[in-house]
Image 1 (spheres, one colour):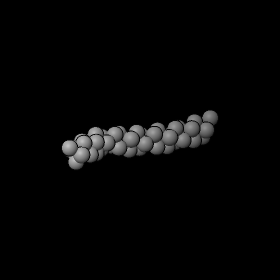
Image 2 (image 1 turned 180 degrees about the vertical axis):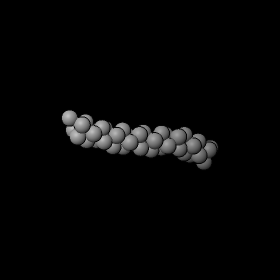
Image 3 (image 1 turned 90 degrees about the vertical axis):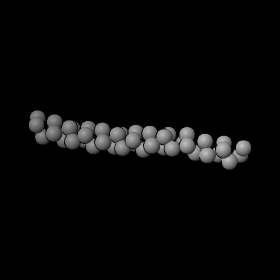
Length: 45
């Protein structure tokens, strides 16, 4: 019984971890894009 609940729990945690990683990378990408956009606007004006 105990083993089954542990494996089920770890199986549920894997998608959560993947989701967190993708969220983190998406935030990093958006931050870098915002910086590039800001630099572009500063040079354009």
